Amino acid sequence: MDIMLDVKKRAEWIKDILTATGAKGIIYGNSGGKDCTLVGALCRMATENVLGVIMPCQSSVNYGSDREDALAAGERFGIRQIEADLTAVKESLVSALGEELAPADAADGAVKSALININPRLRMTALYALGQARGYLVAGTGNLCESTVGYFTKWGDGAYDFDPIADMTVPEVYAMLRALGAPSRIIDKAPSAGLYQGQTDEAELGVTYGDIHAYLRGGELGDCMRRRIAEMEARTAHKRALPLKYPDPVGKEEDKGSLF
Image (cartoon, rainbow, N blue to C red; front, top):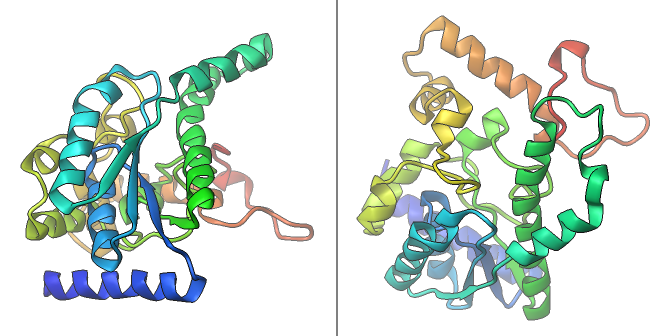
């Protein structure tokens, strides 16, 4: 595949969206990771009116390497960056919910997951508030590997107006970043959502992005791993679909997974 031709096609697609919607520009969340770096670069090729938003929220890494990498990406591709610290907002929300956020019958890990998922949902709210005020569209930054196994937060980073890399696996994202000359510090670090200190995507998922790429692109993959990824895909199908409306058919019991 001609990577630079692919880049051009994606930038033209974004231009068409801006023309069709009449939007003045594009806003996206910049965590300093691979996906948002590529999305920012593609959007910048489509328009000068691109704004990256760095949104630390409690995790100490958000204030250190994440922020530094986000600024490096913005500088490399000529994208203005602003910062909105959401830590106090989250703390206020958790305080307002009080003991109701930790009911006695909560399942193991449910409260921890609920607290972690507040972060991307607050970021989504911030992006839409800032974007609407400017007449900007919100760009999604999720890749095909994450989408396939449901590794995103419903109504958090899973909410956006368009996503120019939704069809790309992680290895494909890295290949395009290298072709565009993205900062090596972003390409070389372990993929992480930055939700808490020491968190990495692959450790949390229990599968590698290389495995998911093989699953999606017909590569070599053991039967056990293939079944595992297929099960993850089935359990998280609801996250890739619109909300149920009566009388939509309800999924099978064996496909039931987390709702978040």
